[in-house]
Amino acid sequence: MGDDKNRVQEIVKGITNLPTLPPVMMQVLSLMQDPKTTADDIGKVIISDQVLAANILKVVNSAYYGFPRKINTIIQSILILGFDTIKNIILTTSILDIFSDKEEKGGFDRDRFWEHAIACGVATKIIAERIGCVMQEESFLSGLVHDIGKVVLDRFLHDDFKKIVKKVNDENILIIDAERSVLGITHTEIGSWLAEEWNMPHSFSHAIAYHHDPLLAKEDTIIVSIVHVSDILCRAIGAGSGGDKKIPRINREAWMKLKLSMSAIESILKRFDEEMEKASVFIELSRSM
Ligand SMILES: [Fe+2]
Ligand SMILES: [Fe+2]
Image (cartoon, rainbow, N blue to C red; front, side, top):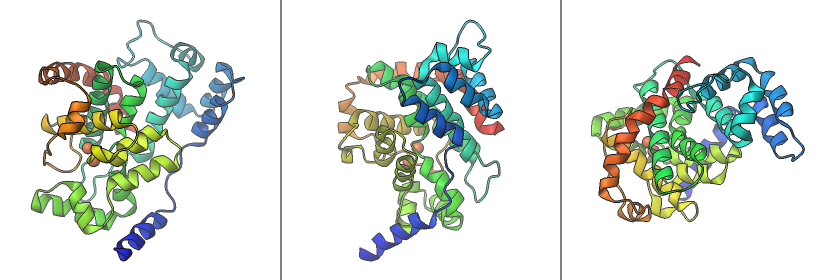
């Protein structure tokens, strides 16, 4: 056991040059903490990064928000959508940017991975809205990042991750079980650690840490349960792929927590296609960055 613990620590220490959030994001975050900050102040920082500014406008003008008229400037976007939404859009586009490696290496299909991540974000948002929990933006992001640890493993511990993917395919097991046996550390641990490093809200790191074992969560239990259910729903309907084919069972207690009837699933899935269509801007961004 002691050895395992050391190994985990060593692995985490070994990933030293983890990608950091773009400086603009850091600046925006600190500006937002100051109550005197105006939309103008934030706008100036954002437009200093032309690519980011263009991506924000793309998202803001997409069907995801569905505004009837075109929003032409960053300032307008901030005034219409508010600080929190803009912050979440920057976080979303930054994550897609930082982690969307184009090449598929060692059998882990990035396009299908992002499709799974975005689908899980969409399902999380729909369920969160339905049961009247948390902000929509944040729920989308919690689903989007739930498996982020896998891309960290793929990038920084690539040889081990290749072995993991091979084991998953050979034995038809869950990727998390293959991670445990090959590395002794899982995407949930790596991902939640990254979320903490990036100072993301705790609800994100909890959703990442416990989406496979929702009952272990002591806080944010609702969003953890929603992401758990959404991940499995997306597996069941084949929306993208998180790298494994197995469909685990939905945890009964987590499901009960959400107080959803079985018939709710049908209407959730009906809305899913529509919402996925609207979220296509994120699929586009994951492929173009
Ligand atoms: Fe996962
Ligand atoms: Fe997943």
